[in-house]
Image (cartoon, helix red, strand yellow):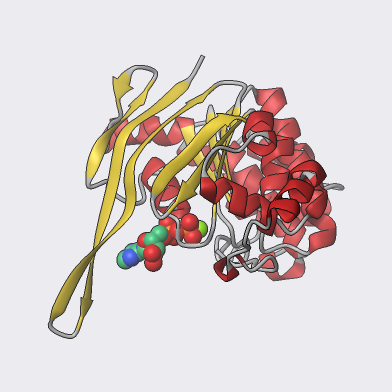
Amino acid sequence: MTTLTVTGLNKTYTLRSGLQFSRLQAVKDVDLELSAGRTVALVGQSGSGKSTIAKILAQLEKPTSGTIMLDGAPIGTRGRALAHYRDHVQMVFQDPFASLNPFHTIGHHLERPLLLHGKATRATLRAKVCELLERVNLTPTDSFIERRPHELSGGQRQRVAIARALAPEPTVLIADEPVSMLDVSIRLGVLNLLARLQREENLAMLYITHDLATARHFSDEILVMYRGEVVERGPADQVILDPQAEFTKQLLVAAPEPGNNPRFLAEARRRGVPMPDHLAPAEETS
Ligand SMILES: Nc1ncnc2c1ncn2[C@@H]1O[C@H](COP(=O)(O)OP(=O)(O)O)[C@@H](O)[C@H]1O
Ligand SMILES: [Mg+2]
């Protein structure tokens, strides 16, 4: 049973403007645990540090401090140990345009990780690619292999990105706002796909979103972030139905889907809880 444990994670960026330097603490003392078969949602407004955590977990950024353990052992950051980590921990990014190479075919995008992670040989490659495409419902598979990213819709591209993340047969999947750049009408389909794969593969999943409604629906536990800190955490239903932190309450009031929690909203209205304008409901980017 895979577990990824993060303790006391901090990330400070040094910003330079002209001759002036300043420091920005993007992530403050975050603890979280991802375990097999469970989905944890990381929810917060834009700029709250969600992607920074995702990038640190994917080892695309180095933390300023904190420890990350995979199955009880400190993670390797170089050489074979890093390769082992990448076998286990994979990521799906927000923007399926930016994450696929426009010059390469869909087949190439899937062949590369299969070979790199030793999950296929030249002889089994084609069958393995087809199997991945089938798992993300891109069928008939032959019609996708030779195509390039621009010949696919946004939703299809994100499915390719998901298939690519599955190629190394990871045990942990980090999905950073995987549907926020997709057309509203197809978001649920992609989220349902992620949920099915998570169940089938018994994945430990981190689902990053600014949307509390899908966080509730698709996760077991919710962590609410505000300015780099986790201000509330708990079982998904509990956080939504009985929020404790002021910021969680504000998020719920500002939630784009009022159906999220009608009882809470009615109560908030009755009590005149103010809606902060930095939580513009229509926001879709990062
Ligand atoms: N490479 C970077 N250099 C400097 N500041 C950064 C960098 N990446 C992110 N930040 C800052 O860190 C904060 C958190 O960003 P991010 O993790 O992307 O938030 P979120 O994903 O929740 O929108 C923001 O204030 C952002 O501007
Ligand atoms: Mg982000």
